[in-house]
Image (cartoon, rainbow, N blue to C red; front, side, top):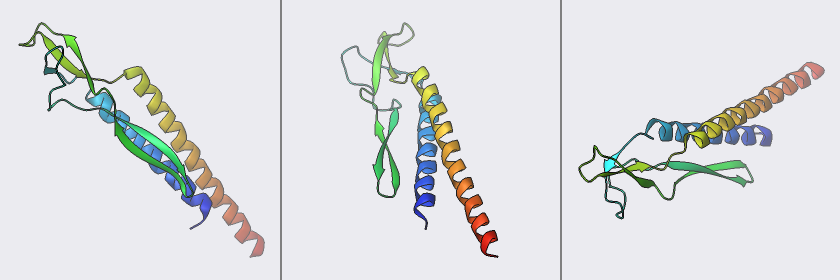
Length: 127
């Protein structure tokens, strides 16, 4: 496969992973679980993730890693302990992540379209 196509496809996959991860974080940002103010977050609480991208010879590699700290404690009068643990999700940051992922996807798709057009013109030149 052509290096241009390989690189663009890896970029598409990375953008997709970033969008999926961000969407999961946003969907679960309201999750709560009773907690103590000093204890670790409850085991069943949603653990947010983020995507780390690294460059490789074949394009880009995207890996999900847990957000640290995974949760923080807030006062909650409805909780039996008086405190709840909530996932460490920043909605503004997630909005930026989603817009960035969308733009990256569009850019890599444009590369594939341009490569396709160039290949067609090359074939037409020799036909």
